[in-house]
Length: 268
Image (cartoon, rainbow, N blue to C red; front, side, top):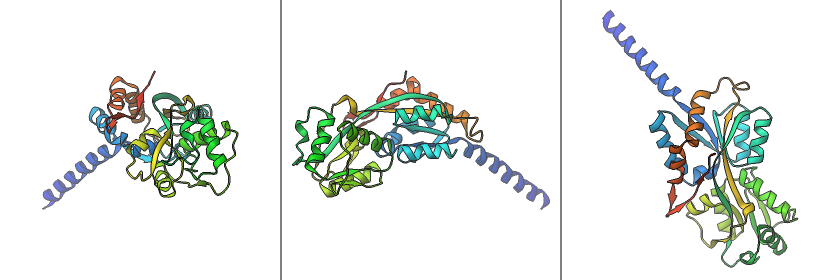
């Protein structure tokens, strides 16, 4: 009986060690809703896990929230799309390294009737100005995400301070914001990847694209070991380096929705 009990204890201890080892082989990644909503992570993360044995658990939020999560030390790695904010994050000592990973672009979506006539706009500033002049409904994420920050820069470039009943700040992710825009027949700025993957379009259509100011760069950051020594820096570095590697870059390039490549790798 005593031998059986000791054997059971040994088995339980071995299982606990195995489970502990398995539980240690993951990182928490704070990233954007666009990388999640588009389906990119569903395609890319299994390839990384197969190559390294490391699982990536994603917390998909707006870029501003992702910065805050990483600043608190509640994530092991960071993948976002606000280059200026990322550079400040490094300068302020919260990350030791930042690298370009991939890019796509932002697009302006709106009702097919296009009451502000942005189809004919020559540039993004003209399109945003036309929406404000027409006081046409505009759905803004309003959540301090990378998309929201980029949108606010576009209003500023157009010389517009968006205000009034026509401008709705929702405080929501890209998918829910597109759903609200569809229900309202409103204009909205979206990253192209989420728009292509979005299924509830109703009367919405892509109305303006192609201005170079709508370029949308994504970056990976290695977080500070000095500020947060408890994080899984070794595992996070493997993820960061894999994203920049030929294998990781090819995995990004291989991701398509409806025959369209949604992210373009550009690691240097």
